[in-house]
Length: 295
Image 1: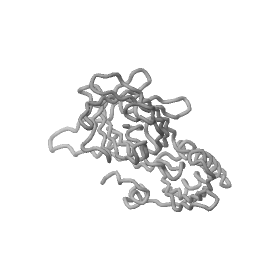
Image 2: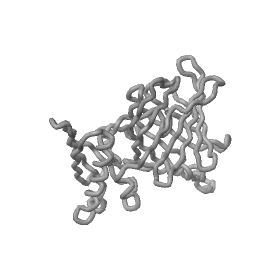
Image 3: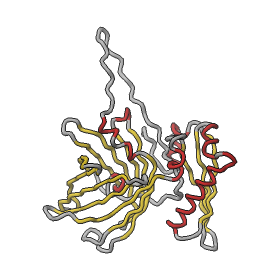
Image 4: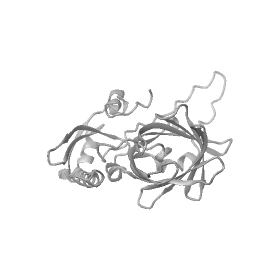
């Protein structure tokens, strides 16, 4: 599974993680002596159309019983989609679980003006090299296709991504072998994390969450301590809200969703701390299980 559905990702310890993204800016080269500098290039409208994919997402997927997954199954995980350098690409980091086990990787998507299609390059932990996909819009649905060889068989993969009115995203993925018909293999629904939904207008891409403690209790419940890192005191005040009202709502919503996901009682405790350099600190990315964007 690719992009959102790109080879399902590891189950997140909590559902309140916010996009830990630092959008990189392209640096302009100085003009050569005696030459006049032309206008700076910028991403076209095609990349703007992909902005709805950006954010920190949690997904749940259902696998149909097919020749690819005879017993069907469920998948779950998270992914982070951010703007690449200068906004000319989008980068997705994903990790999760599928009926085949744990999988993860990353994907880079850009627009190819010569071929007039999107190009997507997917790298995963369960295959060598990369899978190249081409994408296009069919109305309000984003379609990606890929052809590749797996275990000696020629496969065709097609995924259809649709944005829903409630802000979630639905992906239907189909596989086919050689010239055979495409079979629907999974249906996936992705939702933005609670903190992003509630704060994206005031606090876009300015926070990260770290699970500090996970404690299994004798009664079968689990206690989770998480730290929400922000870059400035003003952002901390936004997350907390007046009298702690905002953080209480975020915690309640996330706790409710976690209990549905894990099927047991969850004790969730959230703390907000200021760490000015978290977005530029590679060690912090490693602490929360992510690769630093520039490495």
